[in-house]
Length: 576
Image (tube, rainbow, N blue to C red):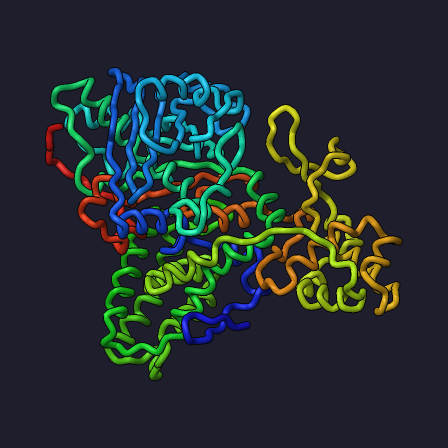
């Protein structure tokens, strides 16, 4: 499979390698992930992001407003902060209160407008937005880290480096609402060229400012407690991220939006294919850059220690698996060889060796290699918007439809739907908790309202019935006798020609592990520090190591934002 990049044609990894649980389970964020792309765009275009209003009491309760100016566009991020009991802090949709609720709105805001937002934004699902509102979000203070950081700063000290786990953050976001929900503005209003015409750009801006808000709240609370309080200093200024925890709801989304899945996979695969196809000389500056990044990755992973985030490997294990690859790269830098033989395409060789060490090592090396593809930033971004529709083409012949299935869905041969284990589960939304759930078929209630995530089984059944009709029979005539296949036919026809539109997985299988799909999606957003809490959800951080808003004034270097090491212990006390 090939794809054009500029005037060159490159080979992309085939779908049977990419769309598997193992490969998804090794996904890491890259320079083309949504979070990285936002900050890079803001820096390149000279966005001005500033703290416009801070009205907080000694416990961090009150209002904070951030002002954003991007060329002719102006937005305000209005956050309402309170304190709630630890028992009330939860990630689930049914939560009734949060430490922080916020809205990203168009234009400047005055006191009257902020006052009008408060009763709506703070109620979230029960509130209603106006036409200026682009994003609603909410977050909770970290029960483990927020007060600890405040206490350290109030005492004039920086945090202890070993105090944080795999996912270091001050605030943990629990939802981002947009695109018409609760009356929020429809994103179709953004024409091509608008900063928010790029998918998830507005969400990432809100998330970045939510992370910045965590710093503001902690430093403000510390200053209110003690006259010797200090600000987060040095590497701590950028180390902490925005916490997030994801559940099963993300998996049906990617199943229901195959065109989006194809675009997201290409966001990762196209730059990887481009960089591995390069012919590289040992004197190329990219060689030194890659050696630095690999060493940084080894240190970053080693600092995570032996804690195993099951089913994934520990940081220490991954660091040990990366070490031989750093030696291979050192050999190329010194002698132009890899494994003792001349190697004109060292990045391909490095990636192949990483893949042989497992999907997580491959994902790490792919992430590092993709750092060298800054020339593809605009190309990748242009491929994100997609057109989605499900329309049956009735004139297509049944024979042609069979050929499409045999080509695009050849992976179905790996599933035996006569095996009860392949139809052991079903998915539904809980009436009480308003969240997707998995249940046991034939045992648990809810099958009559289950989600249509059974793509593998549906297309398999469609293919079996197509085998029984003449190849010249039109699809329209076929559906007259088999109306239950209408949705499957529309899906197969609509994604014909898209290589990465279907997960090569059966979501009904008893051994299906949602974590791998969730990890892939979160990596596309830009999240990292994956810390599974069960088979169905995991904790992560977003923007860990990212620039602060003040860094934009200095033309922040995007290259410094990956595998950021844990800050070292310091004794300096810079007073606020």
